[in-house]
Length: 70
Image 1: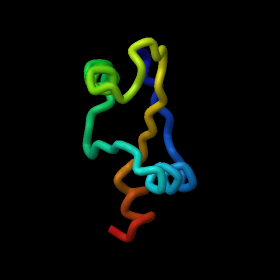
Image 2: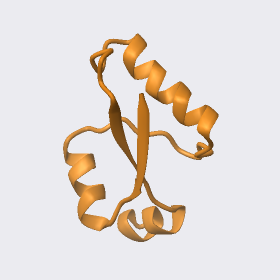
Image 3: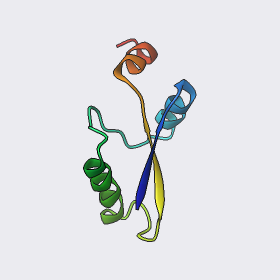
């Protein structure tokens, strides 16, 4: 399965928060980690095994700090 990574803007971050999206903090976005995340979703029945691709969103700590006053 392919995991597409997209940089999220403020609206997307708020949408994901409202939908209780899965989040990881501080994860390196290398191919090995992305493959492990995609496999974990399949292994835990969070997506169907035949799913060909998923989209993951990323944003910086500075954006998090500004959005949530951290």
